[in-house]
Length: 390
Image (cartoon, rainbow, N blue to C red; front, side, top):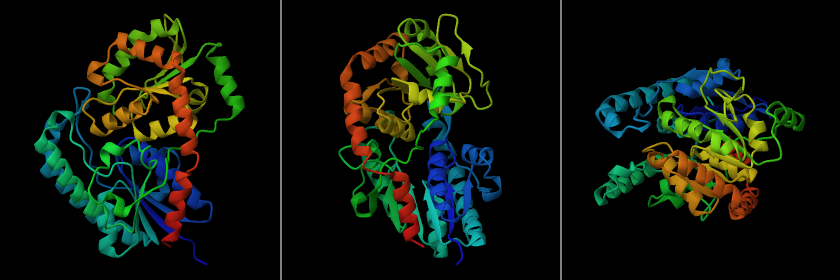
């Protein structure tokens, strides 16, 4: 019997999409599935770094512009005609690449070009999403802006609806973290909520204890600050962390990871307490040890916090509508606190960390949602739905 063949087309900006796609793909590979990946940017770089170079192809990349520490709408709008041209090149590339591999099913992780290409070639298509609609940055949130958001969302709904299945990698209402990015009129008709697909963190207990000893972590709470996202967005966040380090280290075990790819993997002791990694090779161990996470508001990061039962202080990327919506929902559910990037200071950062650790309701609330999330295995549910199309 011939093995199943599955083609994964994965959005290449950031690492959240590619890491969850790989988790699903590895479940399929366990039963002999033959895999092919298509991605760009950080996605294709990660595939090559983890040994998937021979099973990967690099597609034309589309990404947003980053300026002034956040998403730059003013830079994106003038480039839109060029971005649309690149999108058409993506569709043509995917048509050729899919046909060459001849899969039993195509899986799109947030790649509309792959949906259109697979449909034009008559292949079954399963789409994984955590953001259904396009949300405008806050500066455009007028009534007119909201109207265009809705129109754009409904238009995307029609195009995503060309998929045979749309799997929402989130918890169902009222626990949906990305609800601000799902508000389109006919969403319920085509969406199946499958739960979080963030990689499961299961570090070896011996490795966890080795990290504790190496970093000399004592009995005080551990605060793990994990900076992620494009390097152009990090400067203000990193500056606030370094300014706050002396105050926080006086009360807690503080570890900061700057998330600079290719940076030093050796921890550096800060002058007034705490540890700093340029690139952290033991982030899973530190996540396990942490009593509180400080992070961006990416969907995968929030899913990992909930699945691990960890409260968090979230600092969404400036002007990034998806992360802003995620952070506000997380805070409104009482799972932690959110600080807007433009309002981030040393003082309110320290105050937020102290509040989260000293108020037991945050930990209690996140553990309640953890129980809800435990009822779902998003990775396996995605794998099951992909298998059902072959």
